[in-house]
Length: 198
Image (cartoon, rainbow, N blue to C red; front, side, top):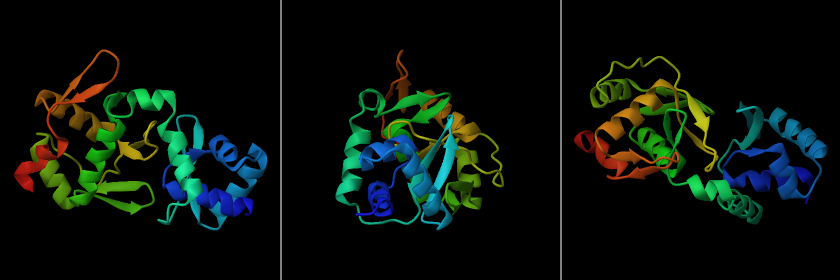
C-alpha cells in the first residue's frame, strides 16, 4: 500500500488528525507524511484546518470505513484525556464533547444550520427565526458560525456567540449542569429542547 493510500485509509474515520498522528498511525516519519498530505490537499481529496496552534487534516468525501480508519477511531477514543472528558464538558464558554457534537448535528439535521462548503456554516432563514425565539436573542443569519475542532471527538462543534448562548440557555433551563472540573452533566436530553418546533 502506498503512503497516499494509507493516509486516505486512515482518514476514512471522517475525523480530524494531526500530521504527527497520521505519521504514527501509518508508521512513517512526519516529513514524508507532510509532503504527501500537501499532494492530497492539492488534489482536493483532503482539507486542512488550522486550529489551536496546529494543522488538522480530514478527508473531503465520505468513504467506507477501512481497517486503518477503525484503528484511527480506536486511537482517538482511547486517549486518557479524551476518555475523561468525552461525554460533555465546557470548551471556553460553550458546549463540547459528544453532547456538543450532538447539538450541532441536531441543528444541521433540522436545517437550522447549513454547510456552505467544507467546515463553513451559516444559519438558514428558518434557523435565524427559530433560534432567536428559543434563545431569546436576536441572531444575525448572515454571519458565519464559529466552530471548534472538538478535542475528544475531532469533529466540529459550535462555538462563538451562538455556542455561548446555547450553553447559557441550556444551563438556565436545567437541561445541563456544570461540575467543578469542566465536565457537564446532561439532566434532560438536548433534543427535547427543540420539542416545540419538531
